[in-house]
Figure: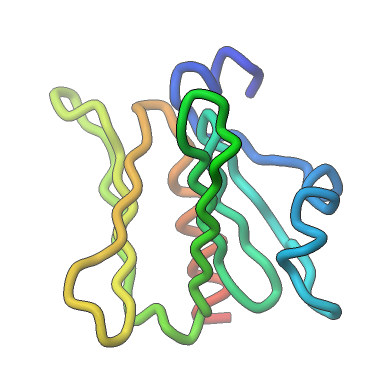
Length: 125
């Protein structure tokens, strides 16, 4: 998927080698980025130990929130695909001890099933 897909809000897979520099101070020794997906500026990063949700904020994107979610803390997740009238897809992740899920929205045409597949592999595999 190219830059046009990113601008339209579609999820695109990111080359994990390109993320190594950005994440060198975030991941620890022995942890590896296994897969990552980009949605405009935000990232969903899967490592060998955890899920990292990256939220780039503001006009320049210099302010960044890195939310770490250990796989063992995820008790369930749900994917809602887009339909004819509801054009957005949604990923919901419930964490142990927290009532409300974390929600991420994706535009129609996003490959949300790829994210679901990777999340299931890390949780259940």
